Image (cartoon, rainbow, N blue to C red):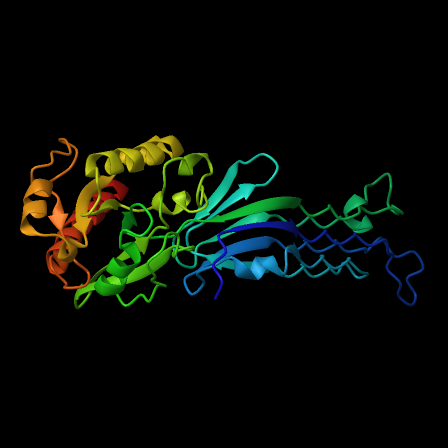
Length: 339
């Protein structure tokens, strides 16, 4: 399935039904009073977070949605039926914005979370509502209100506990294939990963966390170079960032600085997240190189780097359990702050 994380749609809620103009007609009752019923409410447009969806692909083929209009009122004071609401499923993690103003309307994170983005118009009052002692036979009724209509920008941000960031071809996709059941495309050239890959890391029964392989960053990504900012948004929801650096890099400290700079330019709050460094491909270096990497000081913001190889599985279990410990702490902190 093709991954689509941006979509623009138009929605139109249903119009309210018109009120009726009617007078009671019954044998031997020559002057029946007004009995025109009210119109029904127009249907709402509702967005619902569907945990089974992972892309906004469906909106590429359909981008206009209209809810049902309310039915008009009728005689005998019968109110028209309400228009049926239209529920539009979107993936969990979808941010809904007003396309004209850019204002965030709602962030649909929780499974089955719903939000009315466009309200149906109110039904018009029938002439029975306008009867007064001085006007006992009103010959007018209200028209139903128009339903809300607007253009929306849907922006999907992958929901993951851990995000793996690094330059192209440092082994992010290989790592996620080793620690989870995800099967990303893997090849020995830059930008193999053109979409975020999401995997579930199983630690034990009921113990798991999600990990996202974010497409490779390069210097200038925040300004549109390489894959640009297309996938930087997917890092925003992660709790922990793993900076993956190739152990063969000529200047690991410079690599990290470039990555941090691009994240800061995109959203400086990303640097407040829990962070750790892992050197990849250690199966390709000798002991002398390993000792040189161990002596590098990345500063107080980073714990001691890990050394891993997805090929030989060296350090993989240590990485998994360290991440699990950090994820547990972050989840506990979030729960305590929600109470």
